[in-house]
Figure 1 (spheres, one colour):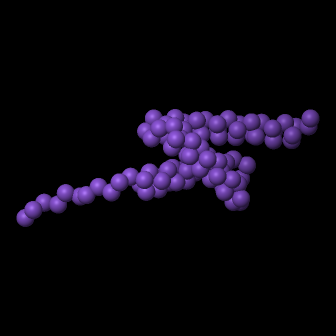
Figure 2 (figure 1 turned 90 degrees about the vertical axis):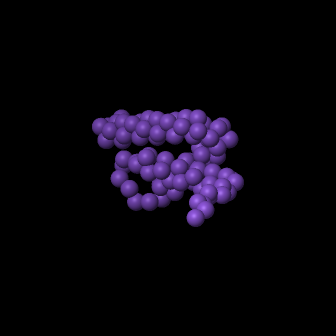
Figure 3 (figure 1 turned 60 degrees about the vertical axis):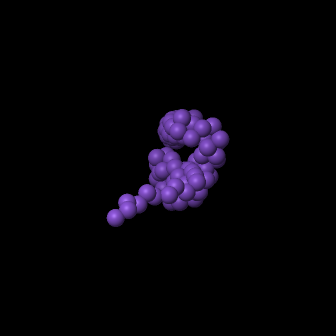
Length: 93
């Protein structure tokens, strides 16, 4: 293996580690706050967002946090749609 291939493999390995860490942290938080079903749906959303980000021009370093932010927006939309509307208490003047 030449030096260029070794460097490329090193970058890929580092990116994989960063992606795993980001996804793991995101899913742990979603599971704690919203339960395992939302975590499963959020994992699917995270992977979908990572594919969408893959189609954008980028450098070798991926911005995994941007993937998590986009997946979080999907979660927020899903949770807000499923939440019963709350009446806002208005003061009687």
